[in-house]
Image 1 (cartoon, rainbow over the protein chains, first blue to last red):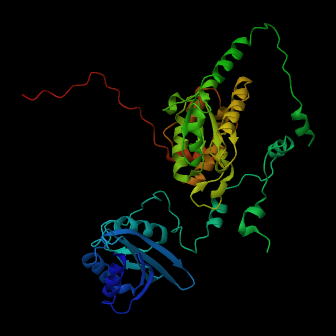
Image 2: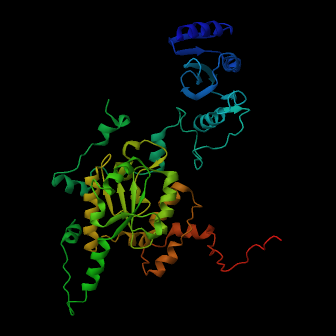
Image 3: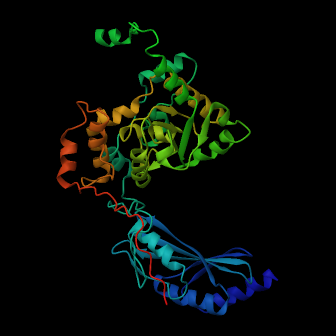
Length: 189
Length: 239
């Protein structure tokens, strides 16, 4: 059964030009599409192939390429298979179309990505803060955000070998891991 | 150096006069240490060690420690795990609502120094910057035995009258408020008026007032009591 569905899906995906289909397994397909072709692909998958469930939208920041990668995972309950559609958009200005009119759960994913990466989705119903309601810094998941520098500026550390710990060690307890062993950024190269 | 050594010499206060004068204090402290109600603010993963500690496997209640649902009736505030900055605001509000004497126990490495979230922009690292902590139980996560042995240590401290760090919040309020303002912004205000409470408990210290409390006074909204109404008019029945 799943072999037939896979064959049929591959034929379907050939209908759109300029996309690259890589079949990972009988139940899993990776599709790379140009950014402007994605809404058409999703409409096709949802309308003609039964991929009615948008599981997630994930985002990867490729800072060296100057691009964001957005991955739309759609699932079909009929053929029990997943299609992951990958697109790349320019990091600046970081604007893309919302797929809220096709998949309503996209509103949550887009709001989350907007908060964490600063990508603006045109046509999304709500671009307000989602989880980081009391955060006024830059979008924290972007690669240029230096989390360690931020916390060193705003928060302070406990002393690593305080007197009370030495008392505990003398009693036979306590484990000391110095920061240069624990923190990769402080490791001697 | 010499001073720090001198401070370590234990000072034994001679009990003068009536030998029974402190008996009542000792009795109160003993009773207090044997009936502790914990408000477990389950901020992180350490909370999962509390159900076995409370229930029949390890049975915390044999020590007189019970869970309590509301902050105003609780004695111990148990912070179990990482405290995100959003959560920290709620923790401080909860702490300030608790009646004195109150004790804070930080469980897990995260409350000590950020733990495995040391690099996270969203979690506070040192809990004792924002409220006085009586006891840390380190570990990731500490087993129920460790939790119970830590609480036993707290009981001993209460019995000996050493666990008085809640007074430190009143005596050094300026320090704690300064750290809170640094993190939450200068317009940070809690519904509890700590300075008035400190005056009421006669716990005004040198560190109660300072530059940070002056900043608070500048923008502080006056706290108004809620309107108390007894026997207010019910809706007239529809005819």
